Amino acid sequence: MLQGTASHAGKSLMVAGLARIMAQDGFSVAPFKAQNMSLNSFISADGGEMGRAQVVQAEAAGVEPLVDMNPVLLKPTTDTGAQVVVKGQPVGTMTARDYHQYKLGLLNAVSESLERLRRSFQVVIIEGAGSPAEINFRGHDIANMTIAEIADAPVCLVGDIERGGVFASLVGTMELLQPEEQERVAGLVINKFRGDRAILEPGIDFLEARCQRPVLGVVPFIKDLGIEEEDSVALASGGKQRGAGAAFRQWEQALWPSDTRGGKAVPEAGAVKARIIRLPRMSNFTDFDALADCPGFECRYVEHPAGLAGVDLIIIPGTKSTLADLRFLWSSGLAARIIRLSQTGTPVIGICGGFQMLGKRILDLHGLDSSPGSAKALGLLDVETVFEPEKKTRRTRATVTGANALLAPGTMVNGYEIHMGRTSLGPGASPLLATEAGSDGAVSASGLVFGTYLHGFFDSDEVLAGLLHHFGCPAALPLLDRDALKEHQYDRLARELRLALDMERIYSIAGIV
Image 1: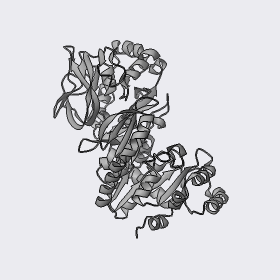
Image 2: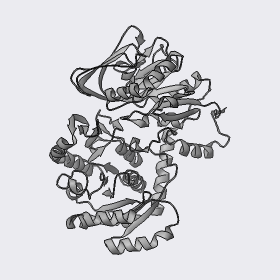
Image 3: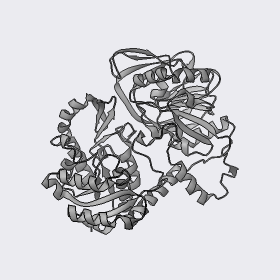
């Protein structure tokens, strides 16, 4: 089990790298995180919702993502409340106080998921959450030392040196653990180091002497590693979308030194200026990684109307709190600016909650998203949305219909739905997609405004190429081989960890011969 001295110490990425190493070494490997808090989720093959961090780890291990890898997912709705998803299905929305009392009842579900993975895989790598030394959670822990005890798993403690204070963090964490918990810690790891390791040696000697535990490695900060971030904390407001774009461009240069794909030059000047509205409660920000990676697009997040100057394409993303984020659009002046730009011909695309906001009205009669009532939306699509208790979670294959001005009819899309709204189309809108179950989304009469419930919409090469063609940037398929990029980056991460970590000792600690 990997635990950290704090959130964002790099546990998720390290689990992915170790999973890749062990898979390369011939073991069947599964990741496991009992409880994950994230608005970045995915739908497994059986329709269950899970955190994308465990999806990334499963990809690195070369296995299909399973809900058992993340049996409890918390999706924050406010600063003090979250929707609780257990084994892929929502069980309710709770305040932090209510969940604190409720979560101990989830230990059986967590233990069952872990046991199924242990029966199915040779190695399970467990990731903790936050810090095991948060003493206010002692007695209510279902993510850290309680799980290590259930699994009888040795623990490697990871500290983040990039933030500073790594020695105090590691020593302080050990000091705050109970004696029996300290016994489970088999080694320490220093993560995200920049510089000459020799400078660290006195600190490493101190750590090993003070904690009586070996330092299993010093992992360098790995620049431009094109692997999905766990959550939107990684996004830079007003800056470029932080996807795998830089890493991809380095990698593709080695494959196509002439900077061409399919015999056609990739446009550099005059790139399409795509602006993604950074909603306060934005979900599934990885929906836009492929767009950001694609040569010909310049993607930035914006929070103010001034950020839409000179824009070519506006995108409103998904959200966990549609009505609250709709109020943000109106109060910030973004709504008025988007409406004006749309009226002068700027295309606008909405994904999931963003699609709902493009309509005329949103009704929440049962108070599922906020207080019961209705709200005026942007009015760019002739649709209305009613929130319903049932949550739709499924993977979907679809094709674009003929009513779209941006994309050619028949354009293929693969994606997944995670929403609680039912959207009805009026006479001024047409379906955007023909799906296996009927239809999805809506397109305005002009064809320049459309919305869809499908997350992963921009992962389609055909969608990206169609948008580039609309903006006068010819593009030949395939644009990106994102699967090959992911494999390359997982292998790169594994190489870095093999160099930085004492893998022989880690295998020994894990009981793997």
